[in-house]
Length: 465
Image 1 (cartoon, rainbow, N blue to C red):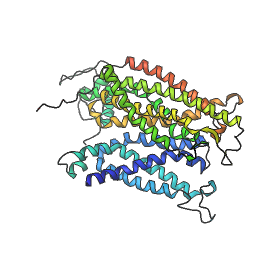
Image 2: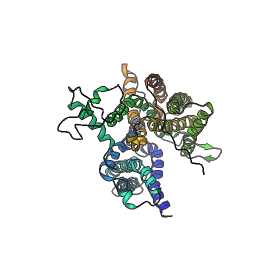
Image 3: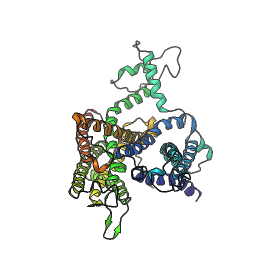
Image 4: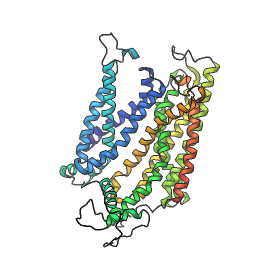
């Protein structure tokens, strides 16, 4: 019972934050009256940083802190962050001087803004800390006869330090040509410049000499980088779900009969597809008897195909939505009244379902790719690499909006991103993403054909009684 309570306490903040993040873009647009691009940028930078940070925090955990202290620190940051986020709303901390406690932009003063941005920073630390240490802590906690000393104890050093050591050691012996393979460790012929790190010199220390095993692990990491880079576009596509997709539904008809359906209904369908789609994919690959080494790369290929379908669908729906606004002359009415576009918000459901498939396939396939291909010494970092990929894509989406916007206004034309979504041409942005993903898919195929995939780690078969 005590274990269940501890785990529940650690999970509640993650669930609450997921819901808050889902509605944050509409809140910033409707209450703060930010334009769509700035609101999306705030959400995407926050999400991206929170999912890139765990790689750095994992180094601190391995070298100094340990999982127990990281979870304690991140949970404290979560608690303060969520409290500040609640206090940043006008109803909780009204402006007495202006007698204002409503959800209006005039009620968002300096105090609310300071609390809001401080909350985002603290929540990002909370998310990153939980991503870094929760799974590892849970595995330790579930072991039989687990003692507090083992949970609190720190892992010895970080494999990221080993990568740095290999580069330093090889650079310091750039002009040496003798290599002794005392342990008879098989070593590859690629990236031979790094083999110099294994040449023995005097004086010898951990920054001037590395074992061949450490050199080979570093080579594996470097060879994975081109593949890693092609995954980033999946993160760019995933990032539009909590921002632009949700804002599209804001002015659409939310009623089914006389019942008004809340926007978070999309998150329910999105999560169901995300959780179940990769399970269906595994069953299909088993029936087709696809070799296990090729299941992750083919899954990434499928995720990219769904990314293309998702953007095409979103572009078509947005074109129809803008056409309805123009046909019924609603552009000036939507912002200042309760007028709604005569188009059901469930037109957006297909793109949410496709996006759920993209994230589900991406999470599963990228995790499996790193699990199969990364060196065993970096097993702790495997899931963090996937979060880092998605986080880089999320931050990259902010850059893509800026670049596409600047390109669209060349020659005196109107920028595709205006103050409101209804004045913007988001459909053109979706078509641009479609082209970029197609190019990325071609690059991925080339890189994947050049990459040598190794067999996944063997799982132990249960012994017969």
